[in-house]
Image 1: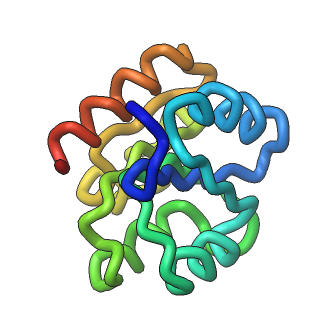
Image 2: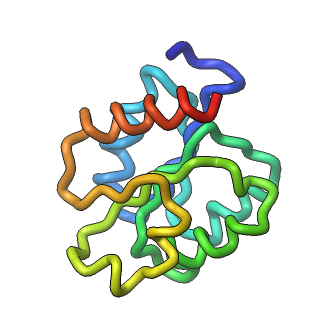
Length: 127
């Protein structure tokens, strides 16, 4: 996919090494925007950023990934597909809203190629 106005991806991840790896992987094909917290992501999204997809860490400082997904239900960006990422094997019990709101959940560590394939599929389906 060529970069352009419709190729924005928002990566919401507080771990700098994971955030950098995702940015490196995706920046060849997408216009990657990053946020280190839920609050920073909300500022971006409410400030007019309309990404084609969001990659969301569930465990964030302050406003959690689950909180963002709940907020997404009534937000102008509610139609943006989300791939949630987490290291917690019991995410279904800890984050019940995730199953209803995220299109996919990937367990850390995950293969970057799998993430890229899911992202491509979501973007094609939402076009």
